[in-house]
Image (cartoon, rainbow, N blue to C red; front, side):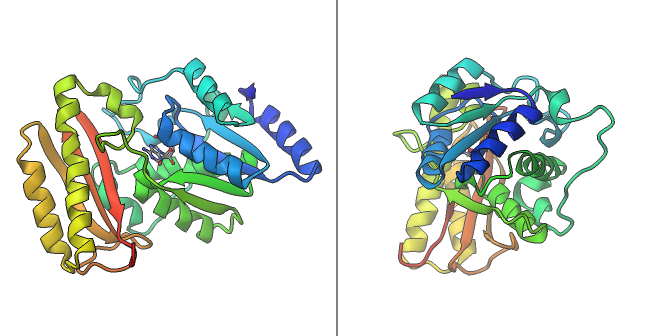
Length: 284
Ligand code: AMP
């Protein structure tokens, strides 16, 4: 696997691959990789000839007081995992390679989508995500890009940005990878104490509860959300940020359970904010 730190090097490798007729897959990450990220790489390897992974903790998507400085990093471990899963190139830039000192351009969706769900407590988050993903699209010029359903709002917003900006890149959404006990894998799980780790199971339990209700024919989002909230509130270490039902494509609130209804939550376990969700699909 090739490891590079500059935009120019990425462009050169990609140009030579395109000349040889290879298709390119991009997997954007913030590093500290786990099996969730690996599943995206696997999918990319399956669907594309060459796979580029970006490994960059993007400062523009962190708000004041968030965990930019403490976000876990281990580039050596990341390279090992990426090599094992068959990535071809990892792009690991410094902040000043991605953002010039006088950078003043952002990519931002101006409707309500970035203001819903996580956007309520993280108002600049999706502007940062759209900006860095746009830059990565321009640098790597992939045929396909791979994102996890773990960050469902992000995936919905990226799809919208790609449509609005005519990127011509296929966005591939990949399912949530969980620990054996159900907790969605996340780099931020490392923040949890052993006691908090146990308490964190309340998210996946609430997801499972809601999913079961929906599959059993419950059509009222309100009833499902109420049951999820009640379950989460039983856990003393949990504090709800939001538990919501929205349409996946528009992120507008849903009243009744339909194809594409997204049940999403963000819950603080101690100081750590965790997210989880399920997407309702008919016949699944
Ligand atoms: P991050 O490094 O947290 O920015 O995540 C990079 C990509 O990996 C995003 O598209 C995430 O949605 C995806 N991802 C993170 N955790 C998981 C998981 N547990 N299952 C599937 N995809 C994931």
